[in-house]
Amino acid sequence: MPRMLRKLQKTSGFSALSPSRRIDVKLTKRQLSIKLYVSDTTIYLWKKNKLSPSLRQIPKIIGFLIRDPIEKENENLAEKIKHYRRVHGLSQKKLAKQLGIDISTLAGWESEKQQPLKRLLDKMNLLLKSSEKKDSFSDH
Image (cartoon, rainbow, N blue to C red; front, side, top):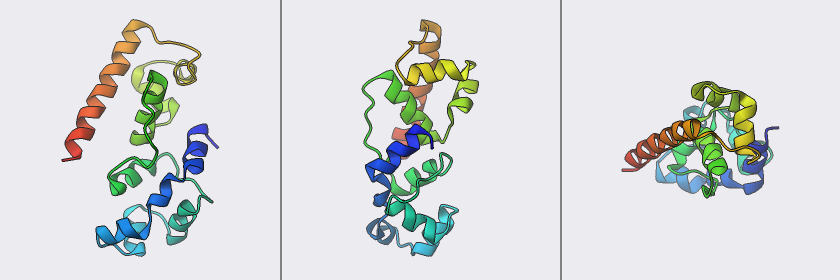
């Protein structure tokens, strides 16, 4: 299991899929499961931390909750990159391809074993800033 999904499971963040949010938006459990393209059992297992959502399901869950269920620890570049990937449902491989870098380079950045060159840092920061603007517009 990828490290990011293990962290999601440990934090109990998806217990936020509780009935109160469903009731706020007037959805039955079945309607929510249809909206998230999963079974009722899957939602139950997420809430009980018996199962972790796949990377591609996380953006749908964040959209439903209107917030990221994992507290943001965006203090450094590594955390910002991980958060960006989680919110956008991207694997390291897909983000590395978007940036035009090798996956091992991105993994090095996320593990803080490497630092990007200025050109790549600027590219990454541009991507992160454009994402923040989109996120702030979607909040209103």
